[in-house]
Length: 441
Ligand code: SF4
Ligand code: SF4
Image 1 (cartoon, rainbow, N blue to C red):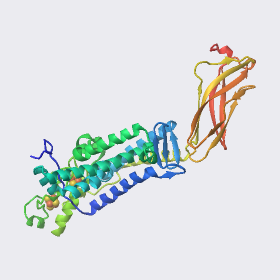
Image 2: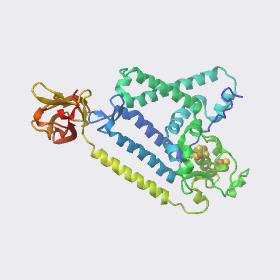
Image 3: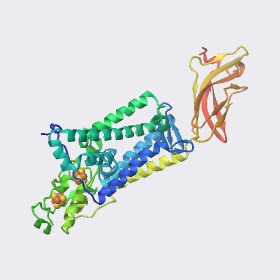
Image 4: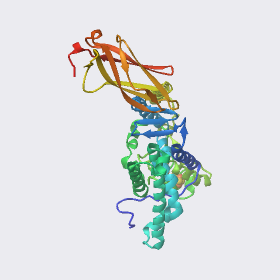
């Protein structure tokens, strides 16, 4: 038994070419290219995509979102969840087969490196079963070194979305950022070298929801239920499976699709390409194909059904609200809190003084703004506040002092703090405490 075996059944997939593998390659390459290029791009002088956690700010295609935009982030999460439900109801595990990072990196990086360094599935299996000699050690070491370099590139890229690509790659980011890169590198290597398909089978929650998200009309990969499994070429003449097992040897999840639908199947369609190749050479249609339970029972495929209508309506509704919110995104945010310590003070010149902490955020991604602060609703009021000129994306908290002659305000009075800039105006409703309030500090 190989030292790699243990109780684990290692999977050594054969290489396969075909229509769906081409689709995989292009979707995988497009996703990887976007992942690696996006952190280096900017839009309107800001990163195209960046999550600045210390500043609690999200930069996204020219917009700046702050902590007060939390509902937009919640809405985006909700949209992603319902999109997944919607797509699953229509196309089954399309996400798993073509877009999940686990599939994309295993297909595009890990298996390619293994093929290059250790050979295709059967060759790898023979080498793993064989003794540890110089050739095997050299190949295993080369694989680990190449995958470690790729994991490092991946870790740096993922962290670039948080720490900024230039910062990170020039060594200017903080120790915590490089520690996180180390964690990602270790996690990726553990996954690529050891955990692999077990992540889909044992850890991924999406696989567990499958039966709830799909129905008899959802697309899946399946074996023709009318075909029998027989040995020999004659079987093909009767539309049966010749038991060549090619569909089994290419499966990255180690399953036999001829046993029927299985939870482990990620709908990657490697088995489809395998059977297309085998049966194609015999001039027969493939026995493994994209299908639905309904189609296998001879019923027509139904796209419009209660589940797809409900999910589709929810997705459209959330997308419309999200788009509207982003387009009407407030470029200025104002928050007012009473200064901690005292409710009011009586100044020597006979004025009642209330002090507030005024926070202004300039969410404008390109323009510097000078803010004017005014007060409405208090008699003979005097306001003092430091000048507020904020760079794009900057926020600042300043003390705002509001004073009213003692004889003009006895009890609590409501009033408005108004913040103006370039035709934009924000009003915050608050209260002014007078001496009769009884709460002098
Ligand atoms: S590839 Fe097709 S013919 Fe070969 S075992 Fe699989 S289903 Fe049967
Ligand atoms: S059974 Fe086919 S579609 Fe399912 S995981 Fe295996 S190769 Fe992919």
